[in-house]
Length: 121
Image (tube, rainbow, N blue to C red; front, side, top):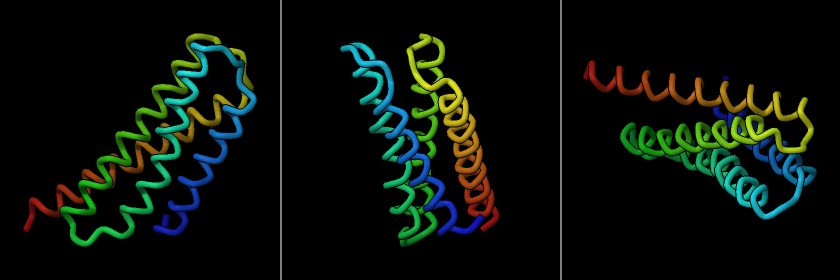
């Protein structure tokens, strides 16, 4: 997957998550969870754009770690919504959980590759 394809994929994830949250059940507790998920999912996309502008392997790696953490946090909030059985589009929730999990895998693998490459030098 190219950087441009991954930029699009992370942005699509943020947009889909935002649309999902617009339609989710509304109350004070759910609003807090929704806000946290909105912040982390949009951060995945925004920070991945910063990764693409990394000036060195160290800069790239540090920024990629942030993206990985935000993707994992998004996955947490999505799973939290599922476990609490919050009223929402269950099909879209499952798709978002799958996408967040795949993004975590992609970014974690990238981090591992960069660390391995740097240890060889």
